[in-house]
Length: 301
Image (cartoon, rainbow, N blue to C red):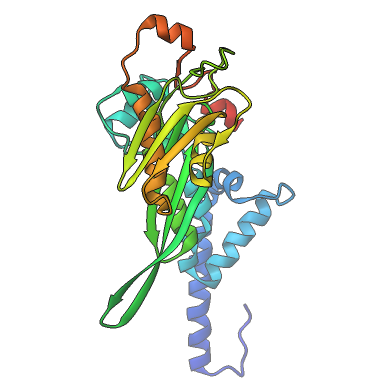
């Protein structure tokens, strides 16, 4: 840059400092040039935007404010492949445990969302209840959200999660993650004496579940009846892959959280009823998924 003879020494010093900051930021951009091509696929949504435009965008943001650099790579960090931390997660990552049924058969609890995302890709998510809770403090009332969500693959696996937070969006995401960690496996079959179709469309036998004051009883129904229940149970049973069932409830079912946990408890209790192999064949009982699912790599591709 050519020197201006009319500039004062103070202005020259100010310009030199500004140029030094710009040079330093540009130097950092040059160091990151080898990383940018890998980041391009995660950050760019529009395919028309090329790698050169991405470099210019990062360069301008760095020159404008060097602290803005970490925010530019948030989407890239989220797209990075899952790195397991627990022993169970490492076994899933190495392929020792290939199905969610094998994972749930282990004594270790699921502590990583990546385990469920890897073995059950494409889970459906539904918000069951969004409420507001408040706490009275010395400074006044503090309002927070309480969100109850449910996840399921529509084929033998379902989970319910709860979370509280100040913002609705982040609380919903947290609740969905907890629902994935609480994933449960259930048995289905054709348990109604009026049906006999031989397809796993309802519960194989009468089961009960309880949470708080709410008690839920699930009874087998023939094909075509549908889910005879309130909206909370209907959402969870649909995500679990049950299309026909009679639901009998007792207690304060207006509490959506207890109602949801009671339904999941009843579905989980289908695994604990002792039944002979002859009856299993007669009722066409299926535990977990009734059809194979594509691995996560095929779904993403």
